[in-house]
Length: 256
Length: 238
Image (cartoon, rainbow over all chains, first blue to last red; front, top):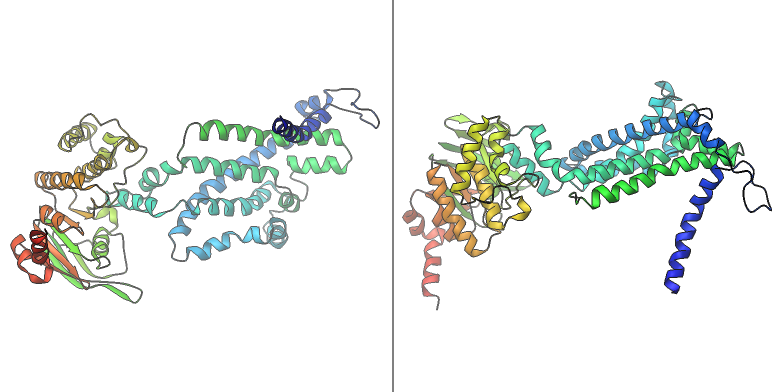
């Protein structure tokens, strides 16, 4: 019984913040000591769908940035990690992939800001995507590094000795066993990009209005109701990805 | 005909192959014995194009292949593990080499069926590698290599992971198909019995060099190979 109570309490403590966020997105006024918000309204959601609050544009922009960044990071990370794993100085290259994480992404942004300004990337969509790639790409490289074991290398060699070119090696030896890993890496890069704030704010200088930027903006503007709406939109992809992860990867038994 | 001329290879300070030379006739199997680390696998990998930075030359039908990419050498390398493609079934695995060369579909189908029959794999065509036994996997790996008729088949202890019964069965099957398909091969093994059973010629790898014997008798009679002593040991075992 006490185990059930503990589990129930834990479940509730996990759910309540999300519930509160969704509840707030339907509110306009909620002042102490009132226990409930009054009146209950759909106006924030209506403004989202009508586009008048600018949140729809931000959500669409965030989806576009995250999909592009995660696709580029996953595909290039897969091949770059192969190059690194097969390189004679692979350990040195791997250590350098940890660099953005050792110094923290936002410090990296400060360090690179000069170059972004010089090439005209500062305050642009391309600049934000390039900045996000600086953390997602090394992540993907580290993620895939361990995949290139002796077995995969032998399989690639076998394809080569049978007359296969580079693309055939990739198609028949490298990719089939990596399907599940590619999907997981894509999801994780998507989430890194989706929740990214520091780099996006610094390189985008507030001009590239992603959903995370909007959440912080509404918070600083003391608009908890629109901040809650933006926050609700922000947690939708992780929930969808969790569902997809469970349904398509683990149940279909893709090789990992 | 394969000719290896003055082949030398070092890993750091260690010289693994030392000015190694030999030649090998077509449609024959050269069984190569030798201790671990004697350079047997290194020799096969250099011939296959999987290792670089060596000196010497490798000629196939009087044409040097030493500088060619692995895919242009016509030398298929078979590992100890069958290394089947997990996403392809038996039929597709065997047909792989012909498919990537864009061979005619009807020819591919006919050749694959013939090879499946030769390998006694009829009825297993649609199975995936994870549904096969160790011996069946190795048969598929052989079929996949035999079907493209490589100029040289390089076998690096292909039966080492099999149980004794399956191993013997596979040795006999290999010998049969290699003769039928007129395969030229270099067969590296640790097992003396396997070497004697599969080889037409025999080689002993020692100190980075290869001594080649043209007949089984010459190989057994040379006291340096240790074969005679081993046969005596088994004869006298009580």
